Image 1 (cartoon, rainbow, N blue to C red):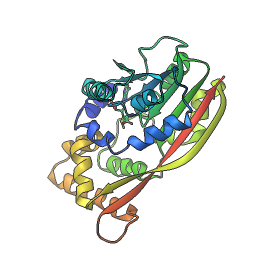
Image 2 (cartoon, rainbow, N blue to C red):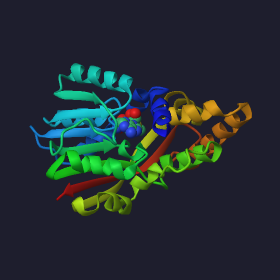
Image 3 (cartoon, rainbow, N blue to C red):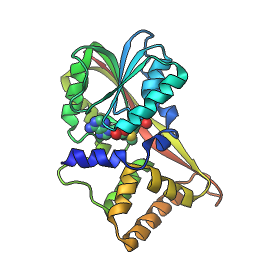
Image 4 (cartoon, rainbow, N blue to C red):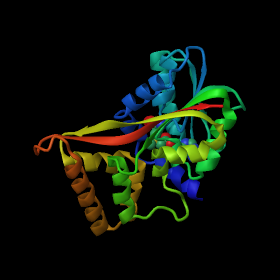
Length: 263
Ligand SMILES: C[S@@+](CC[C@H](N)C(=O)[O-])C[C@H]1O[C@@H](n2cnc3c(N)ncnc32)[C@H](O)[C@@H]1O
């Protein structure tokens, strides 16, 4: 039930529009993972394929898995346009449609963090990875801008009870705990992804229209609640804007980039 609701949330709005603003995160992650041409790479919770395509641009055979069919269709169109060696499969991050020990590297950009059962997700990544494989993850940090945005949203519309916060994936200790004895080495660095908008109102409207979690939060509120949530998001954007001159805004959003080598 929780997962079915989450799937509907990600299928709402149009994440492809949001994904176009974070392409760089996938390109940097693929570079940090030091992918080898000819290797097998899996992108978990791939959306419309930013990291899948980044891997394919490195000469890898890339498989993207996500549970929103429309995003996979968008990914297929992008791959055709670029003539890339890519396969997209419909599936759940907690039950990957991928054979044991078959993948040289797993990538996930703001993806695995949203599966409700963190441990099953990590176990699945280890199951499909060959011994000595690489796992490269990008996850929003709890104190970064998107982490704070989630906190603003859940202060208006609480998340489902009993589900661990996705933001835990933005702390290296949590990853060490999840991947446990399978970790040979782990290296993490905090990076920032900058969100740029002409105005604060454009920022609020963008996330309200295109980003499923924000769209659904507005949907369940009455008119007064919607006004209050929009005002709090606008305040957060103003407080986080590094331009600070009342014109266009630039918001640095911190995320953790982690590269794990498996035993
Ligand atoms: C923030 S988006 C990131 C998409 C993509 N990785 C990117 O960087 O553009 C989160 C993605 O995770 C997918 N997702 C969330 N939970 C999932 C699950 N349990 N199984 C498969 N996909 C999932 C959503 O459908 C969505 O495409």
